[in-house]
Every structure is written in structure tokens, then in C-alpha cells.
Image (tube, rainbow, N blue to C red; front, side, top):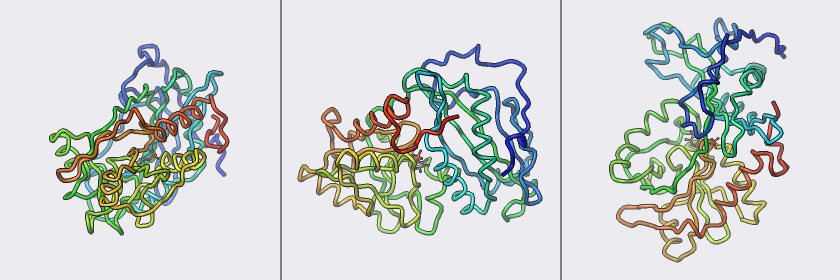
Amino acid sequence: MTAAADINVTRAETSKLKDINLENIPFGKYFTDHMLEVDYEDGKWKNAEIKPYQPLLLAPSLAALHYGQAIFEGIKAYKNDAGEAFIFRPYDNFKRFNTSAERMAMPQVPEEIFMEGMRMLIDIDKSWIPGQKDHSLYIRPFMFSSDEMIGVRPSEKYKFLIILSPTGPYYAAPMRINVEEHYVRAVPGGVGFAKAAGNYAGAMYATAQARAKGFDQVLWMDALEHKYVQECGVMNVFFIIGNTAVTPDLKEGTILAGVTRDSAIVLLKEMGYTVEERAISIDEITEAYKQGTLKEVFGTGTAATISMIKALNYKDFEMIFDVEQWKAAPEVKRRMDAIKAGVEVDNHGWMYKI
Ligand SMILES: *Cc1c(COP(=O)(O)O)cnc(C)c1O
């Protein structure tokens, strides 16, 4: 283990915090006073430094800009009423980051850099964690290839950074979703399970087209038959059918293993639901809707926790839901938010104390 002291700290001379009102801040717009930056070179991580948040100076030939070896994570930190700071399930994100790195032929980031760097950085910028209800500090670790050479091969140099952004309550209005029948997000053998920048780039065109037609997002289907559900936009998706919660399984590697997805599975079981991780077809969904057994459809992800789906459109058939009547999704959200805020006991060891 590298000791914490191996991360150099250069403090900002003044804090930007005094100029920012931490209430109702838009997502991803403001960044804290410091950032973590680490270089990978000659097979080793070096120059680990926490320093004032600042622009990077990069060559136009930077490999990541051309071939897209770039991955990221999204995590949140919270402050409880006693002013103590906690991060929600950061080890799960740490492990997923290295799963993404492996798939993109990028080096593994050691735990003492990812976890200790994150802990130190948040500790230094602790006053930026908003204390109000439903507010949090969004943590964005990311890595990109930094060879200054445009040959096609895995880069030899990389940069790993963590930046922090205070964020207000993310009010996720119930969404209208269109089942995407042409474009696909992920294929078996592809990179769907990696939190890779390119997955987001590849999804934007279809999403923009759905928006132009009045939908909020797309429901991605499998690439081979356009029959089985994968994800809803950049969220995992759950269907409550009778007393069973069904969510697509992760076996084919086409679905991002969401930390919120995993947490929702745990909470749904505790709430008495049977949870099935399995293939679910759009035909099964429409059939359940027609029979009146499809009760709720919702997405899960770090940004919004739970996003309810009020309408699901498949071809010319629109399934409409009265979200006011829902029980499962609001209760999962309530329980998860209460654990994060420190209002309810954390029986699962999800909260990591700074
Ligand atoms: C990040 C992400 C999710 C949600 O994962 P969480 O760990 O719950 O935030 C779901 N799907 C995709 C494609 C994602 O990139």
C-alpha cells in the first residue's frame, strides 16, 4: 500500500465557494476548489497530486481525442445532520472502473490512488458538500489515454483525474419513453458493460431523435432481435409485474451493472418483492400491460436514484401509467434517500465515512 503521503497536496489560495450559493445548484456546472490528477507512464502511476481545479494543457495529437480510450465513474457524497461526510458505495464504483479499464485496454488504477485520492480530495473540499436535503457532491473520476501520437494502439500514457461538483436535488419528472427499434446501444461482445465515453457518444443521435418526437428517452433493445429490453437511456430499468420486480440480467455484457440497480434489488427484496434478473421481452411487457399486471416501470441511476416512467411507447401502442398510484418505486427511492441522508440505519454497509 502506498501511504496517503504519496499524494502531494497543493492548496488553492482562495476558495470559490464564497461566490456560489449551494442551494438548488444545477447538475455538473460548478466544480470545487481542487482536483486529483495522476499520470501513468512507463508502466507506473506517478505524480499523484491534489491541486487547484484548473485546465489541462494537452497536445492536439492526444490519443483519447482520436480513438476514444476514455472511461469514467459517477458517485455521490452526502453530509448528514451532524455534518459528517459519507460516500455511497464507492468501492463498487472503484471495481467497476477497473472493469471498464480492462475492457478498453487501459491500465488498472490502484485502490490507494482511487479510494485514498478520492477520500483526501473530498476531505479537502468538504465544505463544498451541500448539507440540505437531497443535495450532494457529485464525484467524477475519469481516465483517458494521453499518448501524443496518432498511431492506432493502446496508449502507453494515461491520465486519471477526479473532479467534484456540488449538486442540488435532481427532480426527475416522470418520463415518456420510446422503445428504440432501429439504433442499438450495446451488442454481445461489445463494450456495453463498460462506463466508456464512447457509449454515451453513440447514444446521443437516437436520443436526440426521440426527443424531437416528444419523448424524454429511449428504451434500448437487444441488437440482434430488437426484442429484449436492455436499458432506459443511461439508466437500468425495472418492471413491476404483479408482486415481482423484473430487471434485465447482466450475462451478455450489454448492460452497465449499476450500483443503484444493485441497491434497488436489495431494497425491493426487503420490501417483500420477488426480484428476477432475467431476459424480458417487449412482448411480455405489452402483454402484462394489457392484462393489467404491469404496475410500474422505472429507471435507476446515481444522478436521479429513481426515475419513473409514465408512458412507454412501442410502435403505435402507448402504455400509460398513473404514477401517483405507485408503491414500489417511491418506496425504493424513499429508503435509499433516507440511508444516504443518515436518517435511516445503513444495514448494508453502503455508506463510506470520509
Ligand atoms: C452509469 C450508468 C448507469 C447507472 O449506474 P449507477 O451506478 O447506478 O449510477 C446505468 N446505465 C448506464 C449506461 C450508465 O452509464
